Length: 377
Ligand code: GTQ
Ligand code: FE2
Image 1 (tube, rainbow, N blue to C red):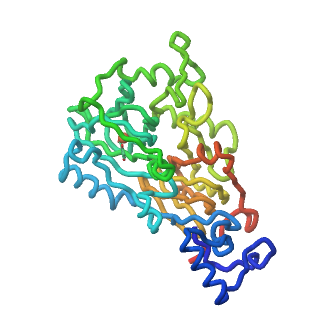
Image 2 (image 1 turned 90 degrees about the vertical axis):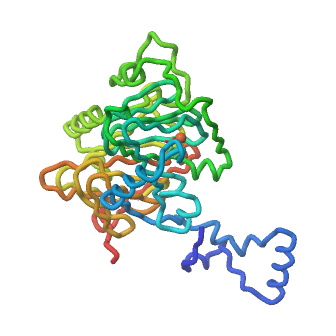
């Protein structure tokens, strides 16, 4: 966290304001020799007045990436690559250092052709996937096979065995993976194992998870009570999500910052579907321009339909279907649907569950200028 800008508040009592002198510089050298340092030399950097993200708003345009992703499918085999994924990296030193798309979130585009599989494995990192293209794909999570179609949202909770594939009669499939790999590596908690066989044998009927837990407000009673620390619903179908958004739009005004927005939740607890990452789908009405706010926590967006732009940190970033962009911690943002006739949909995933469980989720609206940012060129 580098805080090089001088802030007039740094002159206040309680801030570090020590001038270097010859004696002090000699003293600092002696400290360094003993693996120590003087707190006041670093205090203003490590105690910023407010969060200073090292990540930059970044856009990944699907038009530019799609061909490269498809090329990867010709160049390497998924079983050789382990996972054939093109990683999205934040346009910043921190992004490259941590293989991060923003903050502690990793993301990449995974492609699979009909008949291909990704070998079974598990890791401490949790994963979620947003299906951008294709059909006739599936994943197997701890023996539960889940079929996947466009705009479905699917979970691979931490520690679950998983392998994926596309059926022989399916279509080439591209999905956006979101994992907490940078967080797990920063916490130094990341374990990885390979399954004894290339793929898991499914242990349940295909789609038993959505067929058991996918009906709104209804939880099966004939099963063992669900006691795992993540959602028993492993896939959230686009047709259900879309219907729920249109219904929500008839129920009221929605959020001033996000339009109509739904959280993918654990149907048993109502909480987040997984412990470290959450996700939303939101809908903006034709012409809607939301108000700006900012919050701690990092967000990766994927336009699930429609077109518009977001103003992030005072700059405009246009998006259309399947463009991906990020909003780093504590950066102002607002969204605009530029169509006069069609709704716009934004899928997003985030690290809010981490922020909330550590009691460090903070949020504020922009008060000035009627809640809209001034554009900086
Ligand atoms: O599909 O299991 O993008 O383990 C990165 C790591 C996907 C996966 C990624 C993974 C996977
Ligand atoms: Fe994985």
